[in-house]
Amino acid sequence: MERRSPGSTPAGRRSRDRIMQASLSLITEVGIDQVRLAEIARRADMSSGQVIYYFSSKEHILLETLAWREQLETAERRSALPQAEPGWPRLELYVDLYLPTSLTDPVWILWMEAWARAPHSEEVSRFLDALMRPWREDLAEIVDQGVAEGVFQPPGPGDDFPLRFCAVLDGLSVLQLRQMPDLPPGRLADLAMKSAHAELGP
Image (cartoon, rainbow, N blue to C red; front, side, top):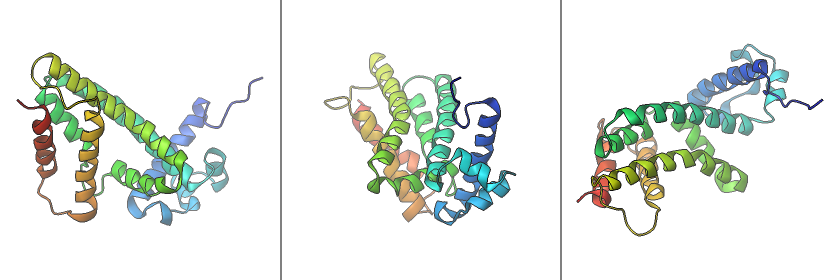
């Protein structure tokens, strides 16, 4: 009989989800370095041994929790984007979905915790790049459709606009979360859309 991995059964997936939900709230509150496995277990109403059964380390929990949240974000985004008119309205919605919702946005806190580990691990870097691909793919689709309909002008040479623009959004987000928390609401989106108009506008 084929051996099932932890979390491959419905009960296992529910247990993993409970652990990741508990981890998400704890990491948001205190950061991964201050989180204790025992506290994750307590909040998930499980034993520490059960947590270790599903996750080998706190870094493993961090990355899997981020992947879990990104999977949900992708599903929500791909449901919401078609509701906006193609072109600038859809790009504006994409920007709003990308940028932090607050200074304590849980997903952005997970991303910053994970980025801090990437310089020391090529495996983590590859893992995070894979998580970003759906964002870049959705952006490429928005731009291609806008170009085809004559709303956008084609971006610069090559096909790396999604990479460049996501980097702009990342930089603006980190600027607010780590350096300029008092930026007015909507300021990041305004700056992002100015960058987009510089490349895609007439």
